[in-house]
Length: 112
Length: 114
Image (cartoon, rainbow over all chains, first blue to last red):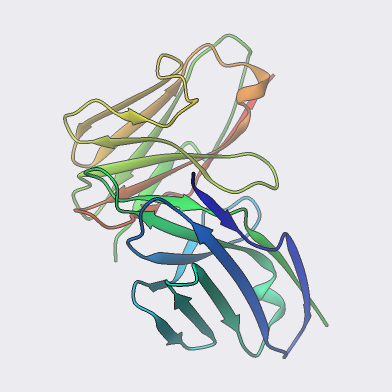
């Protein structure tokens, strides 16, 4: 079956660094995505990994280990506006269309 | 960049009526449209995938006769919730893709069935 796990909630302090983990077990793999979603809004794309290693994009970095079925999203210099849900999604390579399978999401609360 | 417009952003309807949600790709041709549903405090669940001109492929457990998807053109897909019931109240989001990518999300539609 398809299984993508993330911690349900996390709390961090403004200015600090936080790491959000994601583990996955899927029948196929064609890349892993991280999205940010504020309440009542659609998700916005943050990062994409298809090969092992670290991808850095400003304050956000994402890491992937395909052999371990593991990824993390690293947020640096946290700001209050970073309080949101963070969704990990795996692209399934099955069939003619590469669909995304989303994890449970991690609700991050940034405190002053 | 790729822009996807979803309409309406929110709708309230009476139980038993039907509601149509539109998803348009404004500056690209969307060969594939994905429709998701998100219940409060839960993640996105894929409902169906549609390719332009073809019948939609529904995920297990999603009733195709209740959630009608039309993708008649490369820029427009619609989701119609037929005979809506309170348990259909949810946040519905589309994602439009041009050739193999995961897609760009629309802004979502908050459906409340009373």
